[in-house]
Image 1 (cartoon, each protein chain N blue to C red):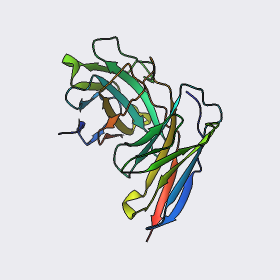
Image 2: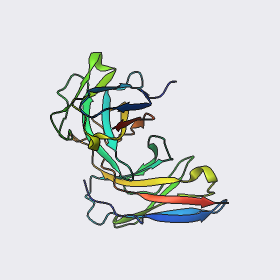
Image 3: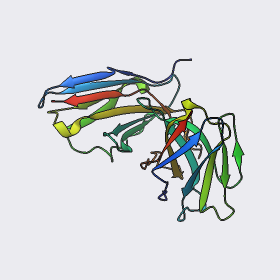
Length: 111
Length: 116
């Protein structure tokens, strides 16, 4: 699976949109972009995934560039409970189902 | 319904002792994964089970680590002759559908292992 690069940390004001970038310049055509987050002392939680098209669910939106070399996770109205480490993962599935987590981005939402 | 559960939540042991960590996946989930997370690090894959197939053990760090999954449900991760570097949070996850690209893994709360 392709390597992903994320900034180590970001800050966001409560109520504002949080935009978390991820670079995956070597992503292949059959790899999806997955986002998970891990709130302190909890297991990771699935957020969203996408292949080519932008995606939205009740938690977040995922914007993938046309060349698929980068993406942005958007939390439209960040709350204090969104403070967590966010992981961007390029994942192809197939016979290899393990997720390879990097160090992610620590998002701190400030009051 | 119930999520993935793990026990114990915390385990303190002495170097050289054996430990067993338990994972109860979500009912009906065919795939089960073990990961570990050392302090300040990302998750490290250890092993995965899928149905009755042979497990993928490619992530196990040494032969002191083993895991089994009985009846396609509960799994136990065993660490023999524990070392201080084994101290970490051990996370279990399960997922429902294989053979498709979508693989949403549901994680348990983890077991924090401390080897003194």
